[in-house]
Image (cartoon, rainbow, N blue to C red; front, top):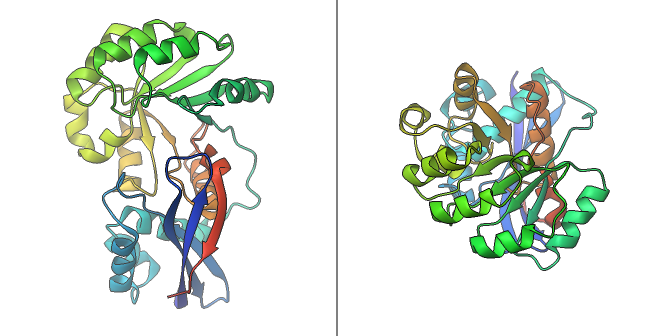
Length: 296
């Protein structure tokens, strides 16, 4: 379908209770000959991804005269590709309204209110909780988790590559095995993560590592159990998902602090891909405000 016009609406998201105070993105609005308009969220996250917002917008300006199908073939920017793919799917496979989906609660172990937040999540009926522990020492984490009720909880534990293998093993060994869904990036290299997986028996999840190396190399270099897909950051997004499916690898979708529009697009992608696992989209609770700049 022919694109009649486009609009780029730059925005800034402001966060509460996070180390980062704000981030920039842009809503891409494409209007078509049938009179309908659809919006995609261009939401890179430097330095955690390699691209900046300017990189994504410059690429769009380079390919914007092409059809949507051709733009999807040419886009190399992960955040632009996700925005264009989301618009394409709104055209061909609309989902409205979005049904309720299971969401993993996101907590930071170094926050002063972590323990009370953990108890509140349980009281609200949540059973899947992701905890970022990488900013603590392993001994601090061991002491902290002794206070927590873990009988009916499935933990996703993210070390963010900050711990040594022995530290991760000590912490994981202090927890009841039934409480651990997976451990995410427990070391800074393949050898460390292999050691953690082999000595604890915990499922190993890759996040940053998945974006640093081609998947074909990873499957030969390290045994892993779960892939964390962040659509706005993941190069070769649909190809990566297709390869993971062929390998029968478990994967789950996660937010990289997109706007509300981007979060909804992740929800819809999970439904289209029949992805059954709790989504990592609890980042939405940290959004304090979204302010638009002048359209460009």
